[in-house]
Each structure stands twice: as structure tokens, then as C-alpha cells.
Length: 137
Image 1 (cartoon, rainbow, N blue to C red):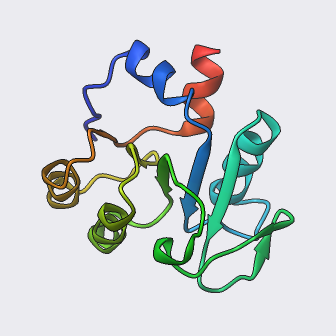
Image 2: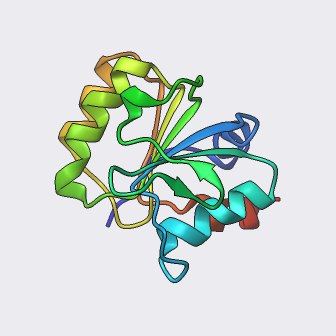
């Protein structure tokens, strides 16, 4: 699977942003959608869980949709199958994050184009936030 064209410097700059809404965050500690956000919390990021099936994950209030998040969101980190990403992007453009990050194995050209056309400058895809942070820091 292909990957975005972000350079290591581009990725490093993303990590200066602190408010990350994690769409599809999981209560299951064995899933990447749980242990990746936990790693981000442990490294000083403000993780905001977004999952309609939970009220709290990792001691943090969980929101059913991105539109329900009252805080400013810098990064939307997506743990949803590629064929469900378009709906997440359509919600994302309404809250205007600086970055959309599609986790490893997730890629949807149509959704990525929607994000860029809506003015979201950076769309990262097919990369893991944990792996990239460990690699660069």
C-alpha cells in the first residue's frame, strides 16, 4: 500500500500539535486503537476518544462523533476501515483540524481529496502515530 508524501520534518511538526481526537478508539487493550492512543497520552498528548459505543476510555470522556467534541481538535487520528473513512472526513472538515491522520493500513483517495479541497493542509495515510513517534523521537 502506498504512503503519503510527508517528509520526516513534516511529521515532526505534526507532533508539536497536542489535541488529538481518535476516531474509532477502542476499549480493548489488545487493539491498536487502544494502545496507540494510550502511548500518545503517556507522551503528553491530549487524546479525545471518539466512539459511539463508549462513554469513557482510558479515564477520558468519550464522544459519539467528532461534532460532539467541545474542544479544539488539531489532529483527527482515524482507526476505521478505509471504506468508512469518507464519512469521518466529512465530519472532520466541519471542525477544521490541521491534520487528518489515517492509521497504518488505511487509505481512501476520495476522502483524502475531500479533506484537501476543504482546506485541511495535511493528510497522513498508512502510517502509525506510535511507530512514527518512536522512529523520530
